[in-house]
Length: 149
Image (tube, rainbow, N blue to C red; front, side, top):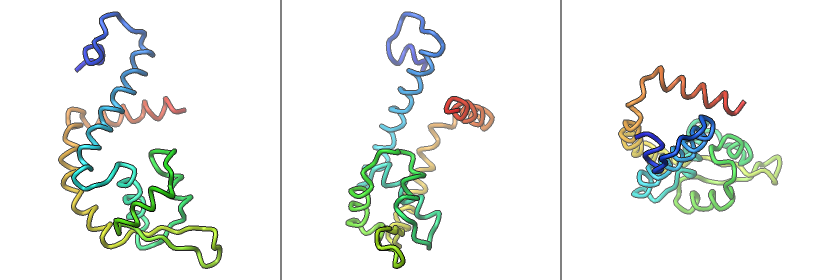
């Protein structure tokens, strides 16, 4: 669906205005789908992102600051986010024995199992993007990289 139809815009927009609106609209469209995917698992996209980061470094424990640096959402309250994941038994939190101010995070077996359960769900959800060819997806990614400078 064209962005003009989606937002019921009948007047022509300038190309930059159109792409800015389209980008915001598409972001919210994707976030709504993410919420639907994660709701049955009682989690958020931020929590999923943390679990994937920790899985990528498993079995190593990672400082909270390193996790926050690579999160897709740069503004989460990491303490509360981690508290929820600890309460669910998906991650464990420890202190660095050489620096007690540094908090280390590590995914638990339960967290790894949840990611395994989510794999087919995420694969199915990604089919929404199948209307892009691999070349188009690469071009779109390159253009987004260029936009961010």
